[in-house]
Image (cartoon, rainbow, N blue to C red; front, side, top):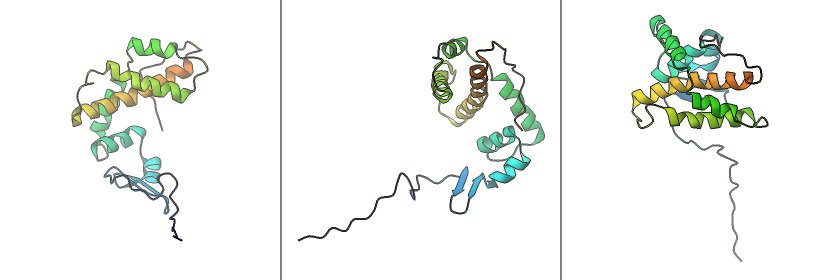
Length: 158
């Protein structure tokens, strides 16, 4: 008679390290989440949304002129292709907001001028565009029934 010793399997990815990252550090047991070495609580208390984006994309917090330039760039990149707006208007009313957002984000790639580039600069440009356009898609989706125009003026996130 054979005896088989079974080792219980972990649930999901519990205890599995998928990769190491210089961008994010997580220690769930200690309750630590850090971006680029900064504790997330400190960032939430002392930084703006745009500053944290800059930190994630460029590896450091921005200087005043860099932050101003990023805010301007985010405002410039908010424009959605008319086809995306039409597609958004065609989404079924019963569709869940996250399902609509996921689909619209996928569709944005059809209109990306750098769709065929995957170098660092192109990826940073895509991150900036996506950040701006996701905000616009979300705003347009939530305001679609009221027919209110959404401003291209940068919002205040904090």
